[in-house]
Image (cartoon, helix red, strand yellow):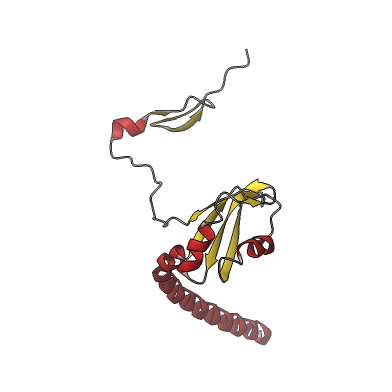
Length: 160
């Protein structure tokens, strides 16, 4: 019984420690939202990146533009395969202007696209459903998919 109480005490201490870490994380997340706009101003989007590209290769390519804080190569969350684009965050906004001059240059035998990172606007791509009659039926000619008031359906042809 004492081993059970000892284990319970240890778990309780771990819970308090995790709750403290969560509270601390929530505070830093609030501060991060203030800095997101600043980070966006210091970041670039790099498109048409070869799938085999490593962050070190991008760092070597963009190091002439300025000091790099972070390189993020985007990957598919289900497969883990690269999506073919990346974000590079610099330490200042002048480096962004220098990096944009590398737009349409050759990197790993591909012409890359380098533009300023667009501001991330929450809810920007959400579909608006103010008009009930219009949003109730949405047909898609490709793939035979359509929406109805009962939900999502796939149009399959019958086997006979």
